[in-house]
Image (cartoon, rainbow, N blue to C red; front, side, top):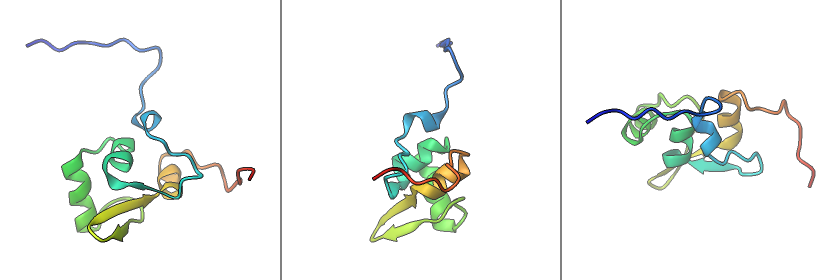
Length: 86
C-alpha cells in the first residue's frame, strides 16, 4: 500500500473543519473539540478523565462539553472580547 499525497492551496487546519462560531456556548468533546485540537477520540477522553484536557470541561451526565470561548482562545481565534451584533 502506498501513501497518497494531496496538494492543497494552503495548509489545512483542523479548526477550519469545526464550527467554532462564538455564538455557540459549548461543543461536544468528541468530535468537535478533539478534532479542532487534532486529538483522537480515545486520547480526548483519556485527557478529560485524567483532568489534563487543556480547557475547562463541563460534565453533563456521561457527556463532556467544551466552552467555545475557551477553545477559541486556545486556538488563537479569540476576538479579544468583541461582541457580535444581536
